[in-house]
Structures are given as structure tokens and as C-alpha cells.
Image (cartoon, rainbow, N blue to C red; front, side, top):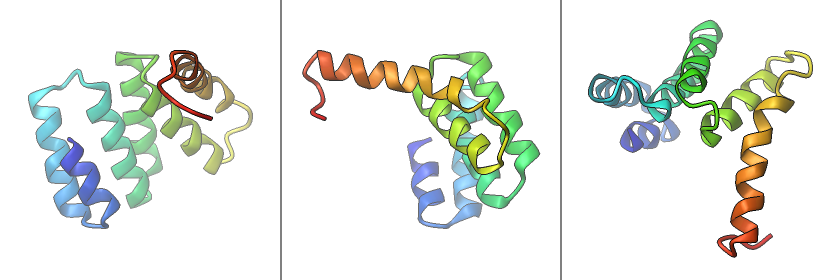
Length: 106
């Protein structure tokens, strides 16, 4: 799945989709894989499909910080009222915990 995200960030959408779909076939209950597919669809401009994938990711794991972050960003970009704020809370909690544990410097 990480390979798919790498191809996505490099702009190779066809290969990114192939790798992400492979990850989903291996682990269909992976919040990470569904979040990655959400990013893929978002990059393609397929906002309805992106939203479905982000929501699937969060249905699987509502505390998955990457999916919360990307879905929140997606909603902000799509101007979906104040809903994105709720998706940043788990990310902020994780960052605070990492700071408290000395795993991250701010």
C-alpha cells in the first residue's frame, strides 16, 4: 500500500491504483488501504468515490489518524461546512500523546 501512495505522490495514477487495489484485495478491512484509495479518487477528481473510501476507512477504524486527517482536509477543500473539525481531533490527540511521550518535538 505504501508503494501505491508513492506512485500517487509521483503522479503515476495508473500504477498507484493498481498497487492500492492490490493492498485492498489482500486486506479489505484495512483503514490505511481505503484511505489511500480515497486519496487516489480525490486526485482523480472523483469526489463522491473519494468520500466513500474515506468514510469506509473511518468505519473500519474511526481513530485512524491518517484517514481522519485526509478526510478532514478533503472536506475543507470541498467546503463542507464545519464537519472537518471532528476529523482532526484524533490526529491532534495522537500528536499530543507523542509529544508527552517524548516521541516528537514541537
